[in-house]
Length: 451
Image (cartoon, rainbow, N blue to C red; front, side):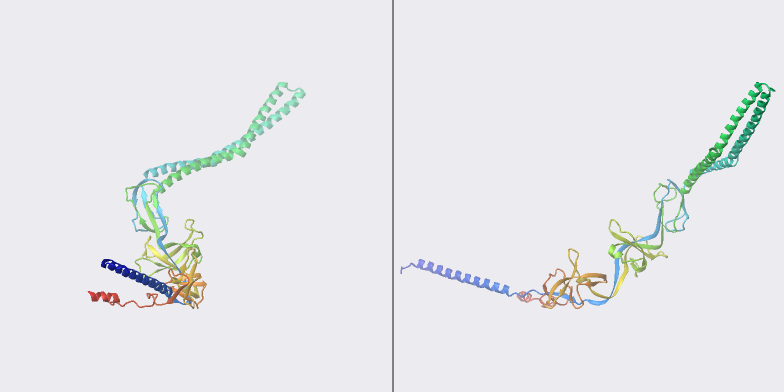
């Protein structure tokens, strides 16, 4: 063996020592990795603590709830048809009025004058109509009859004269000039008769009826102008079309109201309507007369109401059905425009299979299911068909039976096939109890000792 110097011998020893330490570290690493893999392979399957119960058999009643706003039974926003200053108001906001009662008067002196003028024209037209129908037209008709009778008599007279002179002329008793004169007179009488006859026929068929219609038309024209002027006067008098209470009166006497602008609003608040929009399948189960309850802010007890209308058609915009609930308000306790919460009693089932609403899971496609715990403590999803829902309970029509154990709590995001155990709400998966209040962990106690 080669003799080594002290420095070389020392360096060789250090290298051998480092090599042995490296090999030992590598071996320890291999042992640790193998131990970890073995530990991972032997980790127990996780168990999720849930709450569960069997479906119950019992009565369940449907209560359809929705939000609504109270509306009046009827209302009228009175807007004048003319623009004029307000002469006088006869009511204030909050006044109770009857149908037909005068509420306000607009300035109408010019309109009254125009109405008086047209009334005079109408009166004169009535007199003219009476004169024409009872005097002038009958007289003209009678004159035409007399003219025809006279013309006919004159024609006959001239015909007899001509006949007589023809005989005398044939005997040579008279000259031919006399016969010609009689013949000319007969022609004139015939023409007069024809004219009177045609005039009489026209009076019978056309002129008499036309004269009557002309007189009647003039009378109607005068009457229409008078009624129009009188309507303008009526427009200046604002009357209530319904009985109720005045809820709005924005102007004061002397201010000018524009035609079409609201002047007074009257509402019938003896009964109020809570109008709700419901899905068609839900509204289909309701009918007029169904009992309802209305919760009104500031009122301790819910107010009884009844369904007064189920719309026969769907709203084209929302595809919902409008339902009206009517509640009595004879004392005026409730106010129009108040937001309320309504509950309508629907159908009832006496022996229904029901589970808590928290047990129902809804998929993205809208299908419903529940998590059923099998004998192996594994939760599996089962599709179900639901019925009515009330007070946190849901009726199950098909899918499970009363013997199934249904997950009622802790089912959120629970995967199908998860192993579960039934426990109280708030317990963890391992079943270990949490530290009591005031007691820390082992690490906490160590830290406390170290301080």
